Image (tube, rainbow, N blue to C red; front, side, top):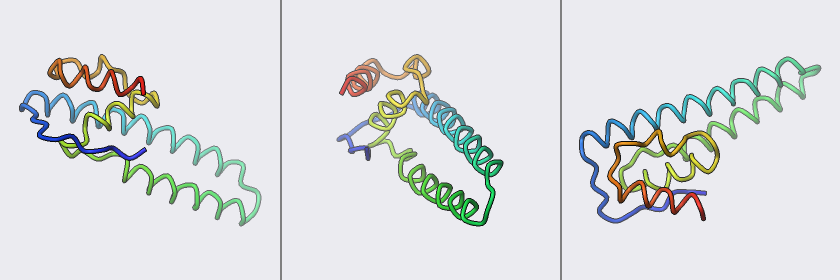
Length: 111
């Protein structure tokens, strides 16, 4: 699911700091999971085809994550909702954002 931009979303300096920390935290969590899976696949690799399959896995994940982790202010509400739905972030890790943003994120996680 690609984030859809929101119109005129303003972020205070404090909100940007909170958002950046949450964004980086969820990215580190997801990357750790990708690394664990890559290590698992590497351990099980028995022939060259397994190596190329690992390469394909890593290439696909990198492409997906590069598109998913968009820190543009217009997309952050949608990005955070997606990260929460996928389990990479908890709503309370966004405490300090404006109530309106938290409400939008909460609603989007239900969709």
